[in-house]
Length: 470
Image (cartoon, rainbow, N blue to C red; front, top):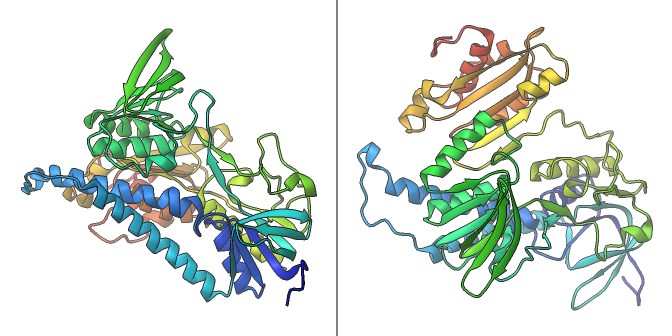
C-alpha cells in the first residue's frame, strides 16, 4: 500500500518497451523478479509500431502488387490490377495491432506491471514515473534502460510537412507520384524500393559510391539493377544541401561531380541513421551514467553501466542498432540481475535488408577475414543452379561462404537473393558452433528447397560442387 508520496518497491524497472525492453522484462519475470516496464508510447517500441513490422507489411504488399502485374511468365495474366492504398494501410495497421496485442498478452501472462508514460531518475535506485494523470515513485533494486533510438534530423531538412522521417513515410495517406530519398542505407533502400514498386518515381541521393554501403558491392549491384527496373534513379557520391517546400511539393538542392542540381518531388524522405535516446528528461546525467562521445551508454559484458545496479541494452549501447541484438542483450541483462553468469557473447550478429533481392550477411567478409590474418578460401554458388529458385522464377543471386583454409571452419557468409533473410540463420549457427564446410556439406538438405544452396555453396568452397562446373 502506498501512503502519500511514498515509493512503491519493485525488483526491476525496465525503461522502454521495444524488442530489447519487453524481452528483458519477460526474462526477468521468468526468473522470479517483480518487474515494472514503462514506455511513453505503445508496447513493442519503434520496431513493432513504426519500423521493422509495418515496413515489412508494406513491402510484402508491394511484392504482391508486382507479382499480380507480372505473372505472365507463369502463364497467369491479370488485367486492371489496382492498389487500394487505404486497404493496404489497413492491412499494415492490422499486422501492427496483432503484434502489439501479443506483447500486451505476454506482459499479463508474465505478471509484469505496465506503466504508460515516462521515467526520470531521482537516484540510482529510485525513479519518478509520470503521464497526464499520475506521477508515482518507484524504488528498484535494478534497472534496465532500453530507450532505443530515433531518426537523425538534419538541420537543412527539418521533419515536417513534406519532409519525412521513416515514421511519416509509413503513414502517407496516398501513394506519392514522386519521392526523393536522402540516404541509400537500409531504410532508404527498403522504403524507396517499396514505393517504387507501387509506381512512385523515386530518386535516391547517396553520399557514398553505392546504395547499401555496408554490403559487398557484388551484392548491391543486383539490388541496384532491380531498382532500375522500376525506374529508381540512384545518384551516388552526392551531397544534399537544402530543401524548400510548399503545400504541394519539395525541391532539393544537391551537389554531385562539382555541379549543383535541383530536383522536385511530392515528398522528401530523410534516412541518414538513428540517434540514441539518452538525452532528454531521463536524468542519466543526474545519477552519473557514463556516455561515450556519440551519446551511447558505456556497458560491460553483462550490459552493466558504471552504476552496478543499472544496465543498458539495444540502440543506446555500442554496436549495431538491430532489434535482434537488443533482444539478445535484454535476456543477458535480466539473467545477470538474477545472479546468472550470463555474458554478452555474440560471436556473430546477422544483418538483413529487405530489398529486392534481399541481402543478408553474417560473420566476416572475404576481405575482413584476410585483413584479420586468416588464410581464406571462399566461393559463391548461384541461385540459378538451384531447382527451387528457378521454379520460383527467382534465379538471381548467390550464397557466398568464407572459410579458414587451414581447418575449413566457416568464418562468414553473404547472401543476396530470394529469402536471404531466412537462409542466413543456418550459416549464423554454423559460425557460432564452430562448424566446418564438411559439416554443412554432409548435412542432407531437403529437395527441392532454397536451403540446398547453402549445402552446395559449402561443397563449392571445398572444391567439389555438383550443380555447377568449377
